[in-house]
Amino acid sequence: MKKVPKLPDAELDVMLTLWTLEQPVRTSCILTELQARRTWTASTLKVVLGRLVEKGLVEETRQGRFTLYRTLLSEEEYRRSETKHMLGRFYGNSVKKLVAALVQDEGLSGADIAELEDILRKAGKNL
Image (tube, rainbow, N blue to C red; front, side, top):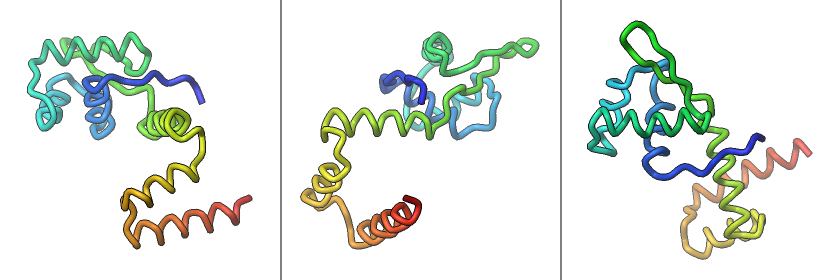
């Protein structure tokens, strides 16, 4: 997995929005979808998009008078990177410690536990 930078909240909100849209997408479409999380002007959005372009996470292309954007990083790649980082930082790379913390905090319902058991059973078959 390539090194994925940790994104500040503003950049992550833009990426979360981009991942939900058919791409390439115009700034106005991104802004419309983003309104649920942020009350930004188009110029603010363009600054954040520019940062994402500089980081190599978003591609910017011109089509006539419009600027179009397309993600170069999948949501799954970012989630995996963030999960790996969080697991290492807070749980010493121990999935067992993470699950134990969730159970202790009553963060898992019976349905969650059953789903995890099913995932682990399937993973065990693939080893």
